[in-house]
Structure formats: structure tokens, C-alpha cells
Image (cartoon, rainbow, N blue to C red; front, side, top):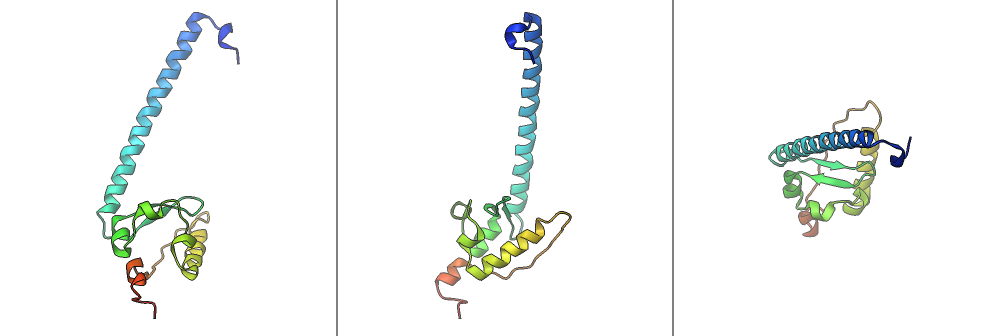
Length: 128
């Protein structure tokens, strides 16, 4: 690839226009992605479904409003944490096992979990 000093003025202008077009396209793509993510978040936040998303390392990056309300937690407190940091050991291990299965290529998994809220656990309810 030639250095910019080796290019003619017309070639430099042409490449600048190409770069500007790529930047505009990327900007539009980012806006479309932002809008899509916002629709998804709004949909889940107004759904009765308890839902969460973790990154590839198993760290929480999203909790639905229903999740937060039913379990008495906040995404601000859970963001970036793993199951081991927010659940009792046996629950965390079960979630991690489930996550590994769900992340396997070609898997489609649905799980049902019965979880008590942290506020109930803190108050001694359900710990018997």
C-alpha cells in the first residue's frame, strides 16, 4: 500500500471521499443497532418475563425490570458480576452449568428456575 506522500492530489481526495462514505455508513449502522437494542430493552422491560443477559465470560450485562422487581436487585449492583458473586454457591454452579449448555453450538435451551428474592433471603424467609 503506497504512503499518502506517493499519491496524487486527486487520488488523496478520492480516498478521503471513500473514507467519509464508510464513516457515514458506519454511523448509520450504529444508529440502527442502537435503535434495535433500545426496542429490545423496552420490550423486555415491559414484559412480565424474568430475563437477563450475560456476556461470553458469564458476567451480567442486562436484567429485565421484572427480574429486578421480583428478586429485589438492581442491574447497577449486578453489572459485570458473575453468578458466583451474586448467588449462593450451589445456585451459581447450576447456572454456570446451564450457561455452558446454552452456549454450546446448535443448542436451544429453556430453563425454569425457582429463585427467591435477595430481600426475602436477607430477612430469613426461605432459608429453613
